[in-house]
Amino acid sequence: MTSGNIQMGPEGPDPDAVQEALQKALQDDPTLSEQPAEGVAAELAQRGYLEQEPDPVLVAEALGAIDADGPGEETEEASPT
Image (cartoon, rainbow, N blue to C red; front, side):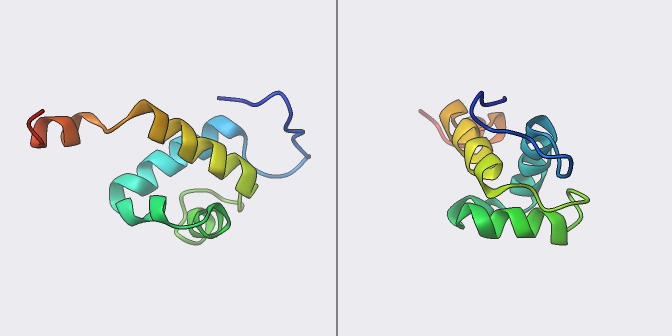
């Protein structure tokens, strides 16, 4: 899950680490997906999912990728469709 137009600096987590941390964080607190990317980026670092605060652009892309994948297995099993 990398974007060709994002230049990674010498600091900060890579996109795959951001997506993995975000998935864990959303399992613990699904309301994070309702917050702006800047707030989610700060929360990932403050709550210890990542050592450094990620670029909010990466967080926004990761949120978009997770939303595009649709609900997780738990949600699909819980709601009859």
